Image (cartoon, rainbow, N blue to C red; front, side, top):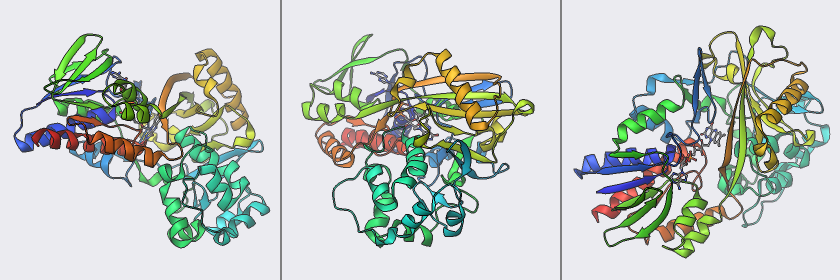
Length: 465
Ligand SMILES: Cc1cc2nc3c(=O)[nH]c(=O)nc-3n(C[C@H](O)[C@H](O)[C@H](O)COP(=O)(O)OP(=O)(O)OC[C@H]3O[C@@H](n4cnc5c(N)ncnc54)[C@H](O)[C@@H]3O)c2cc1C
């Protein structure tokens, strides 16, 4: 069987890995060809090794509550190289708000407290906001319609909780406008809490998701390879045993042929039994617009947002004002360009060598799309100004590495789940065609790995039928 994998991000490489595994088990010969428009595999995964530092210019870790990325890392022989988040400098998340850094109360999870005392003692929220949260169990359940993150949080917990915590925390994960983000597609667990017990607060208090001392995210669930995220890409490329790797080759067309599929690239057209499209959904939609116009329209409707990750390295001896925690989010009331800062050298000290403070800064997103278009000089000026404001000191960075991610993060708009189930239904009409990637079931690396596995299973089932 001859299969084209289009797109060499984590999703496409995972689909290749799992397809090869299925074919080995089934005794089916497999010829895999990889098409990738850029000069290297990995997509948004991008590790930079500099002196004694292993810097992540894209994703820095993956969550283990969804098992697929961890399972894959183990299969690839990376179990011993995985490290968790270091708690040497505390587990706090800070909110920059009202001109100062204030810790999110211990146990505060994405949009609500899971421990009452730290929340009630917190200086971050006003007395009115606290009272409003205590009354959350009295708020009636929402309707059956999909709801935006903003509408859900404001309805259940009030505006202040949204502006100071939920907006920057969730906006930082998805880089999208929470007015347009679907709750059911991004945070279904909160919807289940509301629909089940009738109260998110009660559900969180009964089953606190964060460990002692944590706030904001469940840091204890994240792992990263010490050698860098790109080691996953290297191992996947080895394990898939590609017959050919066509880098710097953009796939421009896709047609059905008698035998299967004709994949057209800037190098010409080639026939395959099956194709996995592991590229952005809107690009997949364009490629499929003639094959299946309905599928093409649905896929083309997925909107993507752009962002910038700037990795800023300081000499530790010259740095003042580093808070005892793992991350900083910036309240939407501050009207700043920075969305969030991850205190990378506190989070993963083993990847930062010695004597350095490394901070990953996130800019852009749907609420500030111009930032992703700024030139490096402008980004550096903004970073220097806003970091000085946050830390209260004008610390001079030793190095800044800037990586833009144009149209890289899908926005799960209202009705996303129904749209995607429509996509998967139409896809079932096309033998030898599969889709995978961040646009379908989740943006995180585990979801992308899982989508690659599902794509491989569909191709294999279609081929042996
Ligand atoms: C800045 C950033 C930070 C993130 N941080 C985290 C994190 O810490 N943890 C986490 O779990 N998730 C994180 N995510 C999300 C996660 O990393 C991504 O959703 C995931 O890596 C996407 O993988 P993918 O293979 O689906 O897509 P991509 O990585 O986008 O890969 C798609 C590939 O297809 C290629 N391509 C596109 N069109 C064509 C074409 N026509 N022909 C040939 N090739 C083509 C592209 O060049 C690209 O290499 C982050 C995302 C971003 C953008």
